[in-house]
Amino acid sequence: MASMDLERIKQTLQEFVDRKNGIQGFALVGKGGVLITKPPIGNWNQNTVGLIAGIMAQLTTHIGERLKWDSAQDIYVESKDGYIMRVACSSHMFLLVKASNMTNQGLLEVAIAPIVEEIQAEINARSSINKEARNNNGGNDSQQPQGRY
Image 1: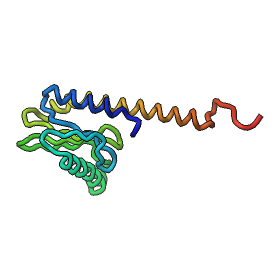
Image 2: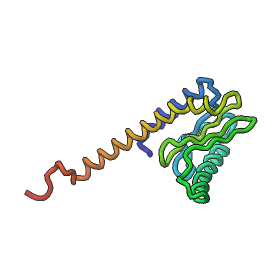
Image 3: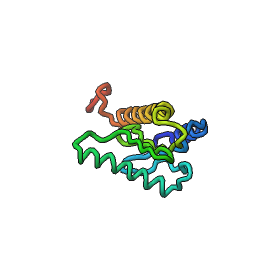
């Protein structure tokens, strides 16, 4: 997790907010509802963002346990004031999204899809780099000679 380019991800998230497509803010959330990026979201302060992130993380667990389903991936909450969304980026990360009521769920899904793809690409790239580093440092790679000569 620490090896992800968080500054690049934060910049990407801010660029999407700046496009004025109804998205008021994002937070990247890790396992257990822990905030990875800590920007304010719309008019929410950091405590509110953290609380809602934790609730969304717990909700997916409770749905899975109670209904005997796989964990819920995406959750959309709609009110007259706007949207709150939990959009899965990986098995251990999700985006918490706040959007205005001046848009709709379909448009939001289309707007958010490229962001999720970019974050997934970053996660996969870092995972590949970390896996390669472990293989190169392990000394037990099948292509390297083993034992004593």
